[in-house]
Amino acid sequence: MWKVVGHEEAVALLSKSMEKDMLSHAYLFVGPPQVGKTTLAMNLAQGVNCLESPSDRPCGECTQCRRIALGQHPDVQVIDLVANASGTGIRREIGIDQVREVQHAATLKPYDGKYRVFIFQDASSLSSEASNALLKLLEEPPESVLFILLTSDAESILPTILSRCQWIGLNHLPLSSIANELQQALGTPPQEAIDLARLSKGRIGWALEAARDPKILEDYAAELERMASLLDENLEDRFAYAEEMATLYARNREKAIGQMKMAVSWWRDLLVLKKGEGEFVSNTPAIEALQRHARWVSSRQVVEAIKMTRDTIGYMEANVNPRLALDVLMLSLPRRRE
Ligand SMILES: [Zn+2]
Image 1 (cartoon, rainbow, N blue to C red):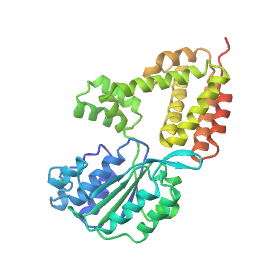
Image 2 (cartoon, rainbow, N blue to C red):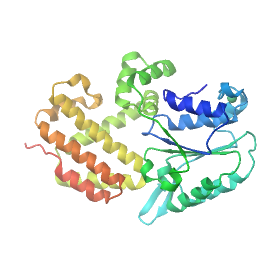
Image 3 (cartoon, helix red, strand yellow):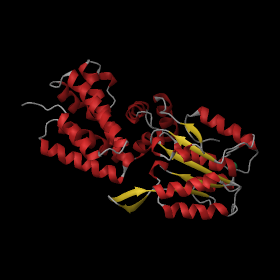
Image 4 (spheres, rainbow, N blue to C red):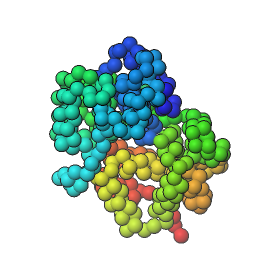
């Protein structure tokens, strides 16, 4: 049984390819963070190694499926980001040494299962050396090897790598799917499940984590509070925030972009409140600060702030001097006059 929530089209396509024995050597799962890319990749790794008949794979029950789910299968490897020193400091990336290990392992026959599966978390963080080494592997893929690349940002992957992968797009999940899953899998009470699903903005992984660990919601609320306080603060504090965000970006690109997107949703909520549609606010933990600011900021200023924040995300994603882009954003945000 596929464990992934939603993504019916992707599941149907992969099941069919497995049944017909027409799998690609390499897949690229593209979608926003925490929508289920890793879960789907693990399910596919189970599927190709499962002992059941093709139409029932992955069964989730056989020894192969269970060991993969527990992360204890010698033929299934997840290649994660590690901290490496680079020209501009420490950067979390997938480095050349990691891909060399994959190169070596890929030449060996599967040890216990039918396929060796290599799952690359955040493939947009491959260093350029690592990208070139991976490209060589994809150009001449060894037998019985399956590569699964995961990313939320396909544009920053080498085009020659992209052209050798079959793309599978995963989107945000509908609120109802997430709320249902929270209730069924974790027994979350209905109203709480709906609130969390709304806050998750379609990211099932975030919703499940937040339902299990209250600290996630606390941190989230603290981050929203910080954003709200920037509108009261002086320029010095704003530049300090820009510096922090640029440092975070250098260390963990995805997290920094995620926080900026959170800022966009915060501003959008402000607009919703200005229109008197408070029931559609998604950042409910920040409702007090949102109401406080909705009293003085104009709708035009909010629209402008959303645009500026989005542009800044674009500059950051394109790697155009993130610090400068963030400084410009901080200068442009509206400021409460006492
Ligand atoms: Zn199985």
